[in-house]
Image (tube, rainbow, N blue to C red; front, top):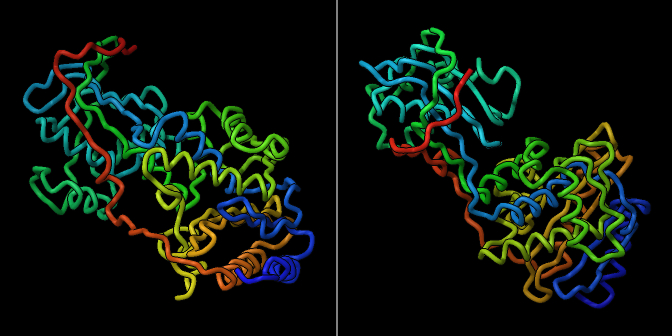
Length: 393
């Protein structure tokens, strides 16, 4: 960055973002290139997912997998389970059609064609991002009512599946007989994709399933505690989290605290040999909220970051990091408030484009993983000697 460029950035910020809008830019060595309303805490919208991602990695580790246990309450006779089929959820936030179809195919491979009883759910089980009417929706998919594209993803990811018709998902039927009081015996265990690619996919699309996902890190209060401990003491009061997704009206972050949190997240990732690109979207490359932003030839692949939008609160945000050849990584945070969303996004992109033009920026060393998410999940058979689950009433 040339002499006088800091002053140029300040002028750009006032002209492109507005004098009262918060923006903060800092280099790897801690040099502050720009600080405008940097200590003012405003609603950060989905930029709240940055501290939640940090807390999840610290509490669970990058390779953590959420477990869903599949059990039966009776023996398998002539292809029919003489009892109920039980799913015990473990809080997997990414349990969707493809995962259910993979389980169904594994059950068919074990000879299960029919369940004489019904489907029962216990524990924390979200399905297709929802917890309403979960039983009916999951049962319908297991019975064959899933989009054809979902089965194609499963079959392409797991070509070893032995099915009668590769073009159609194997279906189970249910008899709805009553088997109250029977003891459940675990049959299969479904393990989610590892936490690292899981949060990457959720951050790419800014999925608000982060709200219940924060519970895995101890809840919003625990996320806030971890976030405050990760920044200098003077910034801790600038972090307020009522939830882990950015939908709570109480959420507040300042531009400078966001940058410090992003740097703390980067350091946490380095412990396992990973980088910000492994948990946040790369502009112009990853599908999701940044796919069509900063995607011109001069910008694409050079910004990794997190968007945030909550029109009801007048919040729009963009935070990220840029690799450079002479200043290390440059981190930035723009937290707009009281600006219409479409206008705010245009201003953010214009400012970051100008920032890239002022820096000797480099593309991030990153190749997108285009495999379907179900390819990173796994379903394994439980040893027959496993301890029986609780009695089902």
